[in-house]
Amino acid sequence: MHIPVAVSEFWNRFDADAGSIDPTRFYEAFHFGDNEEMANSLADLVLEGTKRATAGSLWSFEYEGKALPQPGDFSVLSRAGQALRCASSKQSRLTSCLSTK
Image (cartoon, helix red, strand yellow):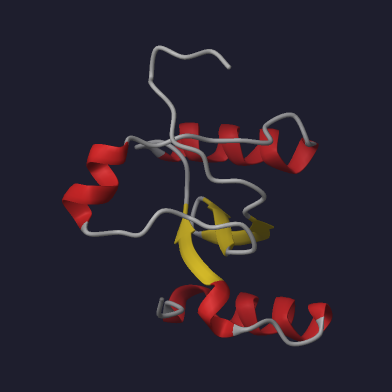
């Protein structure tokens, strides 16, 4: 996936610090929620180590023609327009929304 200009400087610093990440492992740049307060609040939980997982609907991935994240993919998390953290996907699993396991 293409690395957006808005996070390219952040990605390049991460890449240099990490020792040359394969650019094809870039998955997305995103923020949580649909408003600034929620995006900042959830990003803070990630930075604190409290929030360590997220979920999406298979339908939305299919509708948008977007591949599911794969282990080893990297995403850039932002907080109110500021890139904060690169996170690596550890696991990608399909499960029923009614499942708790």
